[in-house]
Image 1: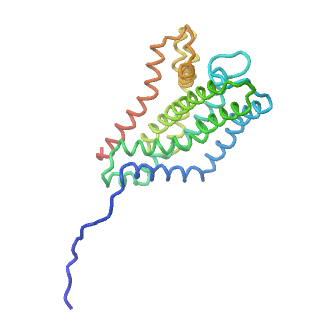
Image 2 (image 1 turned 90 degrees about the vertical axis):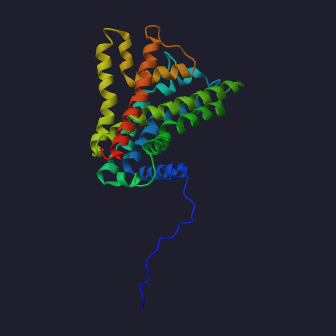
Image 3 (image 1 turned 60 degrees about the vertical axis):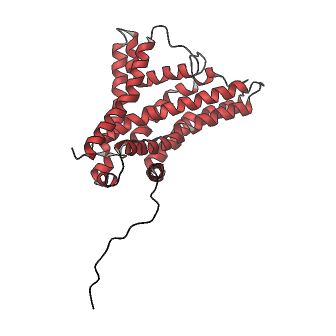
Length: 280
């Protein structure tokens, strides 16, 4: 019996599109995290402390309308919803847990090489990981605030629903900013190490250390408050909801710090991924 040579045959299937690959990665991250005990604990406890109590308050004590001052701005009566200190704290903790193994785990188990064995670019890989982290964090940072707005409008005593819809749109923008703000920092730390623990602790410290330094230096100049990333985010909320920054805060410095906290982590992540994809 003769030996038949093995011949390569042309594959006639349809290749998956770029965004389909992104969705596959995002779906994998979401599936993994919603089964994670650490993520579930943070989501449950954080949602009760940060979101459930304010919702119960507006149900039993209805407001006349949903106003921008309820979400941001300065008030001496109650803390605005988006500026709740626990909101920022649980967002940081959730970002540290969710992003800690996004890229570091790929380094550790060498699956990073598999991603780039196919025609995938570092930018697409980064977007996929960021999208997965943001989707999980949206369960705490985006969905509940939007539900809160709907609850307020559903129980309000006044007829002004147009203002409520505008505020809801502003809230959507503020929440999207929050997702990128916290996820981007965690993604950067995860891209710099193979150890999940280092990335998680590093993400938390990346927010905590500037907070401490800000409290020390602000006694010399009030603009040093902008060193605190949470303060910068809160001032951005004010601008989104139509409020002005405090008079002793330079708007140019605020824009500079906000741009730095958003862009620098992304740039470092991309450069790191690009170098590793080339084997450097």
